[in-house]
Length: 199
Image (cartoon, rainbow, N blue to C red):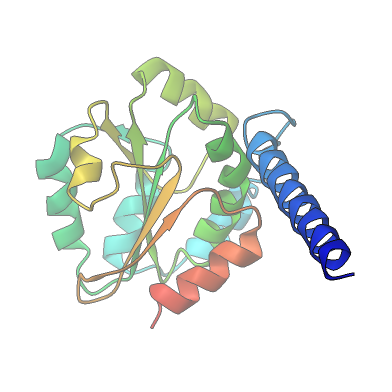
């Protein structure tokens, strides 16, 4: 009787483990570009209305929407210093990264909804300039991204591991959270922004 019970428990554990493994594999595959992802960028008029009256530091970012900026770690860290006093969300992405495509619509919407309060900055890692420019034409965002072919920029905020990766910085310039992997919904992204940047 005891032997039969242990046998049943072992089969239940094996089945549960296999189900979890299949579920995890499905999640990974769903983020690898297997499904078509569409842009969720708001209309230009809606963006202009949302950003009206933005603080000068944030307005300077809005003017550089979709731009790919050079200058490496020096320019990036100088920008972070300029933004001191504003909460910052830094998103590392690449045009070749399927999960980055999955989450970009969430950033398109959140960066407009919260763009009068929060500074958004991108880091385009291990990418070609041409491919990144094409990607941003497909998924336009309301903020610039720093070119980072060797991940020297990402290393300044300890974000040279995952794609995508999102780092939160509070008003005092302190990193408060590091999120590895994609945000699958705008609600999840905005929840973390409120929790880790707008404290």
